[in-house]
Image (tube, rainbow, N blue to C red; front, side, top):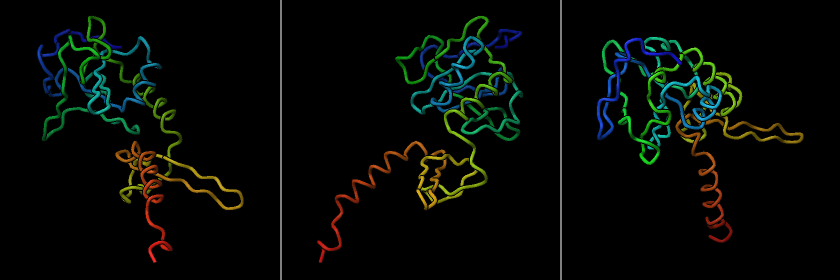
Length: 199
């Protein structure tokens, strides 16, 4: 955790989530909740303030400006200022807790503000490996949208005896739907009329 030398920033609104431009006081790093939960356990007391967004299933850490532009971690995004456009983050009031859809999971407090970018990178890299498994090599086709993805997620592996098994990949958007889609396909197949019955 790193301290803000000026201690000059606080959530601007006390009644609702407010869109705040990143890149002035801090940048932000987001990760899906499954990866973030693991990373928070690894960071423990070294984590700075953290925003939980249950509406979108994401967690956001605040980090020093320009300390994570070169990151390339699976399912992790860096929110920073860009030359030709603004990047905004919805920041809840400091008093909002877990009974809201967006809240401070680790509250902003004196001595708990920015997370050290190097420690966060290590924790997120390990958490992503644990949550997502080994990194697939190269681009793969998503089972659902049938489009190539640079961030393939292994959603199923089949192993056969004398016949080789197969690996099913999904893009990050469709990876979370894989088990539900499988059940829906099985139910649909089960209730579909058989060709013999249709004759």
